[in-house]
Length: 112
Length: 114
Image (tube, rainbow over all chains, first blue to last red; front, side, top):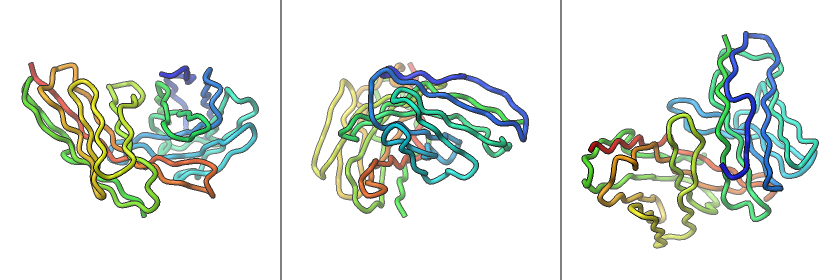
């Protein structure tokens, strides 16, 4: 998985609780992305980062926030989890050429 | 609006039975078309990038081709280990070039029977 780890790999939480997912890379790549994958929707971009403390929204950003304080870490936070955020979350990275994105192993989140 | 449509949704083949998966797209500012393979419970694994119509890429039993409106992933003499979901994605520029977004199709689930 191109030096990408995600934690936790599985999480069950309750509606209304905050949740933070972590993506860690060892490739020193500049760009990092958070996607969610749902049946029938494919992978959809939530947020991305183009450098430390530089982030922007993707197409499905409502209800999510991100932070990147170090090159290697990109955090995704659900401030108040809802059942519609039950999904599989993937982190991806790409280098300065912004060509190929390499994906992590995913985090399976269930919001009850 | 950028759209990527993959067909069929699911495909069952006998070992050795060649076939093709289709990815049709409608985008503005295409920078590249990507094929990924995804095994159950894992993240997408990069296979190919195609940049211009007429381009072809090959890897083992897989060959990807690109036209102005669609891409095909040809699988020649598949084996059971080729069973996976194959994802197509188009890359477009977003936010004044600061990053590039991948827009994915929903995938084709391929099953190769021994």
